[in-house]
Image (tube, rainbow over all chains, first blue to last red; front, side, top):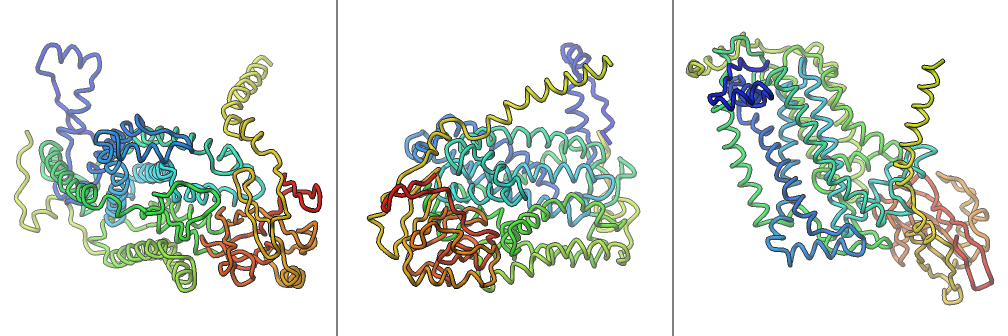
Length: 415
Length: 163
């Protein structure tokens, strides 16, 4: 669904170049005249926010790598060196550390948006699965990045997560030794995590290109979950409409980011990570970063090591199958009252799991984690059956009808 | 015939080229050398005490068990154990228990200080709540296996060699 590009460069040089590499035409058709559904709300600005955050993380990360030393005897010191000695080092490090949290805030909203409005449904299955892959790469990147400061949480987080692989029958222990490059998390582990932490963001960028490509082939979903039928009536050109709206949303998001960066730079971290890593002493409560807490709760809820690991990875993998679990023909929750209730219940379950993941694994917390883990997977089971026979509300015939029903003005003529 | 030969050569060549990139991840010669056996002087460890020494980057717990602890460990041989193993198979000399101090769940170091030893008076893992007894066997919680016994020997009555 690329836009009707009528792009002809104005200058002779531009025409000469365009006939050899039509990159300006690609930009023109993808980000200038590209038709966006005219009913998009502000939940549709998080793709732009995420792209911005990826670039911000890469830039701050490259700068940090210029001052950081990936060695167990110097990593912790070099982070303090960045904080105290490097010009603006505190700013760049806090931007990177809080940027990771902001990245996950944005991605969770982006994913919830996709879930609520049925953005995973045909023909957007590949688009959705690419998104799940990006999410997995983000988790791997964030995990390895958190190890680099080599504080107590870094070390023990690395130990717990790499030990997940030891749950694999027969070959598990050999795999963990191979991953560590030693008999424990140690200097070889730190070194390779640094290397991979530098690599993965560029792999994310690559998959993001595929994600955007897939999006521009099938077109954006929208709050009414109906396709663009008449480009003139149902859509608006990407520029200026989406460009300005996305820019405004990024600015608003940056206010939240700046609030954390300048006023609460350590609120989302853990005090234990300002203690140098010690392989002989485990902190009393090992807690991952907040964005991993729901999955951590699922891991701990299952009273079997292998079972817990399978449940945790399964809780992410199941998202990739959503296009086939949800069998309803109607996309948007706006016209699916039963699904809407189910969706909000799922959101509450995820937040509940996040809360439980931050609590010690004992007594009532374990039982509550088990109940909510069952509810997490129950969502997909219920959805599978509910979507086959749920009663949906009538869906408007066109996007223009949906907008005009609310008193919107007819679409302006396309330039 | 030519196709099979070419294909086979390509497969062997690809495998031989990939192997160094996989193998370089494994522990290097320096790491293996640093994992050589260590000697521990036992004469300074009083009865009832647990001493932690570091070997191959991991803590090794050396516990000088009291008569009561030995008795408790042996009595529980017949209890319901998630990973059944008699105490006699886990020690060379009953008063000395030597185990790797790495929880078999996800690798935390279980607590063994007085008051934090869990309901079986062994060790308690603070991460996910696994409880070990005075033989280092898993009794409660998510850990699937007993604390592993490393390879060790007694060079003399007061000298232990780990590794």
